[in-house]
Structures are given as structure tokens and as C-alpha cells.
Image 1: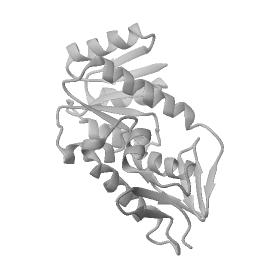
Image 2 (image 1 turned 30 degrees about the horizontal axis):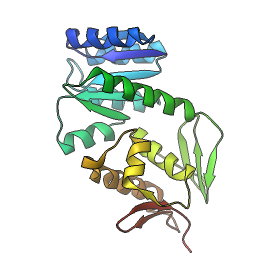
Image 3 (image 1 turned 30 degrees about the vertical axis):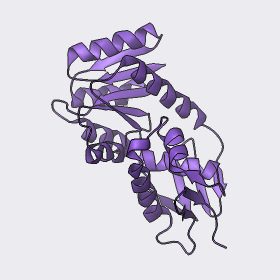
Image 4 (image 1 turned 45 degrees about the vertical axis):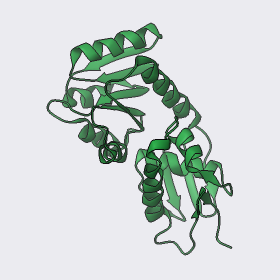
Length: 224
């Protein structure tokens, strides 16, 4: 597995690189946003670890640029900012997970492995529910014949719903499977993303598919 680390603090970058190489990953480093984009587009990476505060171009604009170029490689964002709005901004930019600084390397490694596992599982046949279609290979989604433009996290959330239709999914369950770890202290982020997804999937449709189960969570089902 090949990983790109984009981090301007060379000491931190080298610690991450050395630790991942000890776990048998192949690791390249970049020290500013422009270099990160260049390597990401050229390198065929399985995962990118991306700092938010970078010279030349910050991490949010880097991941937005990669997603605009249809690069769906998983991105783990590193940030010293731990306010809810900062976390939402990072996830909404197209990253798949975030880790606040300072961090323990064991947690970084666990999140890296979780993202890589999920990336492998996402490859497969097209998934259908009602008039929704999702292609795990291209990460494209359609409602009837209209393509829906989703961020990476919105896509992951919808895929989880579509792989578990007609089942009530609690916020904790969603957090553990879509974010790959317990997210209890930030459960309102789940609500934020479900709301984003509803606006794109259900707003202009004749029937609604994403429903709230009050006090419990959410369910993907056809209206009766």
C-alpha cells in the first residue's frame, strides 16, 4: 500500500513516515499544498494523510482540488483545530476522516487501516434501491436518470444506507461504520450530513427515501 503524507512540519512528517514504513507501507512526503497536489495526481496512492495548515495551499483547498479532479483516494486530515465547525469544514471539503493534533501514532495507524479496508470493500457491483443507483467503482450516484453530485463523506453515508435498506440505523452505528470509530461526542455531525444528503437525494424527488426515526436514528425506505 502506498501512502502520501502532506505535512509542513518536517519532524512530524518524518515521524509519520518512519512509523508507517515500519508497518510495511510505502510512504512519500510533501511539505506544501502545491507539492501535495502534484504528487497525489502522479503517484497512484492508496491513501493521503493531509495537514490542514500548509504553505502555498491549505489542506481544505487541496482535498477540494483532488475531488474536483475526480480523485476518490481516501483522505485522512490532520488538524490542530478541534471546534465542531472546523471538523465539519474538513469533512465537508471531501476528506474521509480527521485526526486532531497532537495525536497518538497508534490511533493514526488504526484510522489508516480502517480507511484502507473500507476503500477495498467499496469496489464491487452497482447497488440499487428504489430509483437510486450507486456505482462503488466510479463513486457515481443517480436518482432515476439524474446524476447526483456528492462529497466523499456524503457518498460514504449514502452507500451505508443503501447497503442496509429498510433498517433503522442509529447515529452511533452510522458513526462507527461511516467514520470508522465511536463518534458519540459529535453526533450532531451525523445529523448535519444526513441533512446534506436529503437535500441532494430527496428534495426534488416525488417520493422521499431517507426518513428520521425520532429519538433513534435514520432509515432508508420507500414511502408507504
